[in-house]
Length: 94
Image (cartoon, rainbow, N blue to C red; front, side):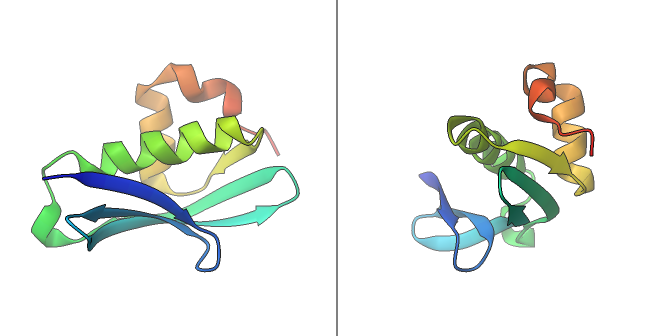
């Protein structure tokens, strides 16, 4: 199983694909240098395989690489940051 995460800016979401099948996404809005994560969803067929964490990590790493601040309105992304304090510096207090 090869999981690949890509940013799909036209759909305003990061997507995770497994063997070319869409397994989930993290939806976002973006304004200037702030990315607001609003919803994360993993297809039930792929739950329990760690894909949500893989997706969150890749999206946050990409936000860091792009110099973006993060507003984690999505409960999953917010929880992921809470469990991984190395991403706490990305959080925008606004």
